[in-house]
Image (cartoon, rainbow, N blue to C red; front, side, top):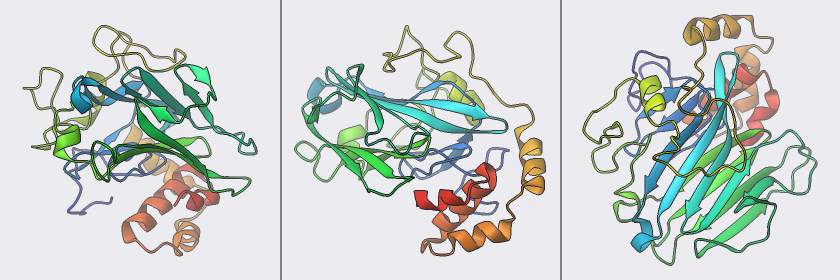
Length: 285
């Protein structure tokens, strides 16, 4: 979003280049979460985060969705996403080896394992065939239990995004995590009574904690709780300086993104290009 965007709730920070969208996930720069109620928040740090979890999802199968963010100078992006349903875990990671025939993924910690289901729900793996930068996605289809609903994890280059498609109160109404409360849209702390308005504080609150959360990733990445999430120094000032000094001008980015139809996608695309200095980022859209 941008300043003045009525759909954004600004918490003293710029709404800038998202990498992570929850309901409308974007790819890069700031990890920007769109809450269940459509409000946009930014997280600037690096750590493992609880997006959403519900031990009673789908009549007790249980659901955990976590992301691993990576800090690059003054912005961060989602490097890896993992979903647990029942006894199964799907982990998906972005990568720079785009010529590979298969994406980087693990099922129950087994690299590129073959499975048609996650927790009993159909799993589809798709590749658009584009080279050298394919768009790939993993879809967990809840249609048998929650008609029309699915979780989609998409990859473009090293960037990952997560999308809860057609999320309903029946399916995710009891989840807790950084996405907030589905019914009210409030972003609660772990005690589910304190409302946290600062998004960096919210990220620190929902950093994965071994005592409280399942560990879904196949490896350990720095930092792990109790070490707090890494946060950039002066992210707004540094970001403005970098944008001013960037080699790709805003006009070039706007021209590259002009083929997109949705105004918000164009805005997101421009920010992604300016942050990454990569005109190919238009391909993510």
